Amino acid sequence: MSCTEPYRAQTAMAIDIREERIKVGIVSREGSVLFSRRYPWETSSVAGFLDTLMLDIADFQSRTDGQWSYDRVGVSIGGWIDRETGTWLYTAKVHGFADPVPLRYLIERATGRPVFIDNDIHVSTLAENRFGIGKIYPNFTYYHIGRGIAVGVVSEGRLIRGAANYAGEYGGYLYDFGGQDSICRLEEFASGRGMVRWARSLFGQYPNSALCQADREGMLSPAKIFECGAVNDPLAAHIVHHVQRGIGLSVVSLLSFTNSEAIAFGGELAGMNGLLPALTDFIEEYCAPPTRRSLNYIGSGRLNVQEEGMIGAAWLTWEEPGPQPAGGPSPAGRAT
Image 1: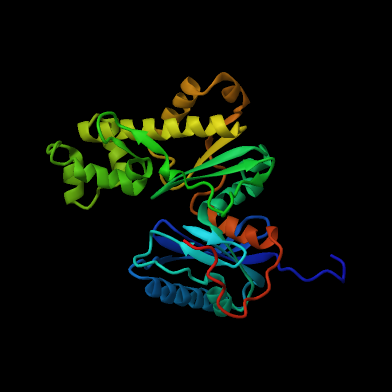
Image 2: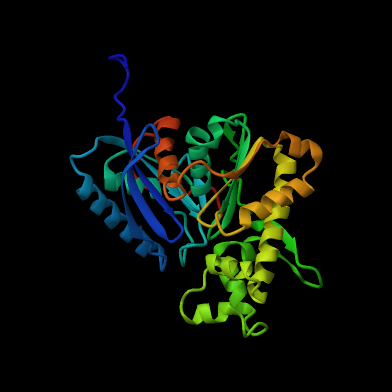
């Protein structure tokens, strides 16, 4: 580095907010998580979320003070983000969210460092692009299956963001169960939250299902549904069939549009029992021949699902040009 270049630390603070938890870490420029802490995510109100987040940041800084030098902070969070202003425009995950939140300004004030913010699935896709599947394939799709469903599409090494940085919200893909009024969004039944809600709504039709007992014991989860589906529990098998088919149809449609070289599945539920083999078979059967011939990889993402959000958030701080520290609340951004 020449003496005229500004100093840039080789580590960054990363904050990853998703899947009902907050993870804060120190990440190297090579994509290694050097230290991290996990905190609960307060969703009862916007004020409660912000108060808790600032306490978490203060706790993390006290634990890392003097151990690492970092000059920037990257943040990964779900919802609609205005990257230019660092404003959180919308989320359905925090109760009472109505007005845009100047999140960049608040975190800059708490940390004393410039902050970079982006949508959580964009961030995970950037991590895969820099440190994972993107090192091999410059045209790939990242498909996230967790409490929600979303995708990131990379074309010639660049993430497709859309007109308002909201590209990839794929949980709205429509699925038809057949019959009158049977169309619903994929996320309503195939995401982690959707599977559990759907199972409970069908208990009356399947009173002897093992899932009923699992729910009474507080053990009902997507993993339990797939586990019971593998041994032909009627309710679980019904749900698993539609989850696999719904996601499969959405993947084939997506690949027909993107013509990707690779599709990498990520998120905490992507590795559920039998899901990836079923999706692979679906792709093999239903993709058009040119689309399938272009597709060189079908499988899991290359990064640890527990760390990809922190890795991507840290990479934001090196990928993007440095923002000026916010001097006050950011503008509200686009109307919602």
